[in-house]
Length: 398
Image (cartoon, rainbow, N blue to C red; front, top):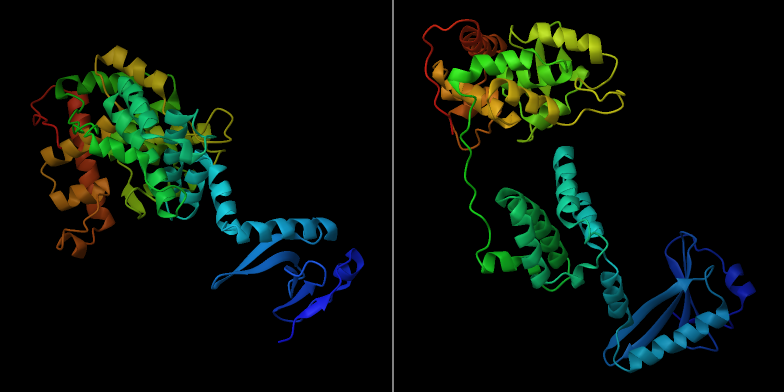
């Protein structure tokens, strides 16, 4: 196809017709390498076309609406000179763009390309902000191994687990940056090379049997109704803290007395009957927060509450039991084993994946069987907190 050549002026560029399909290229008769590309979408773009050796370079300069013809000719001449000098303008622009790419923006790009649970996204964002708030607007190619070593040492003073989990988010962010060519290598790999990752020690803490009654009474005595129900459901149903905090009333069947968790940690929905001991507390909470979509609503009902730290500390002070919300989940599993529930049932109630359990994959648990099982756990707890008869001794389930 013969080149379409004309003398570029503002009026002529503006008057160039829009093709029905594809695009048409027009060349300037004054600056021979300057081309105007008109596409069927209506875009008109100035470009440079220049052969260098065996390779043709096509470099976009600007939209015709953003630059005058005179400036386009000057920019084209400068670009041709760069190409003739062995500089690849496209690669140079890419490097300049990378230099402007900030750490926080890279994490956003990574998360946008992944099909992650909303809670996981929030967790990654929170941990990067918590550990690297002063790095979020820093170009990623300015982050060095020495900076990472110093920050790791600082985070370790807060806690080994905190250092590990925070640095893992940084590592996956920089892994992504390296994979897409933003950086040549991941500086966070220095932690593996130097063997600085802390060994995780699995917690096995449960609410001690001898203090279960005192703990239960302390929770029941809380003035904060939301915190009370939050802790009781954690103990009686074994839900994870985030699953509870984000629970919505639309997921609670008050009439059928069941709760369905959506988008859980293992990627599936999880439905459990509500134990008989929990229903009175949940009914009372519904009167308090039923007007919000959140079961554990914030004071203004606009969002869900956060982990109730102050009430938890109050329970610890009143009962003498040091615990975390996850210890309630661990205690639930331990009691389930103590009352001789089958392991397949415990996994089902805990919503643990059975991917590697071939037999477990064939088992479909009836809702009534689940109700009997979870009420068996509730009966154990009730027996322990209402009397001092001999009850099976608890040992932490790992």
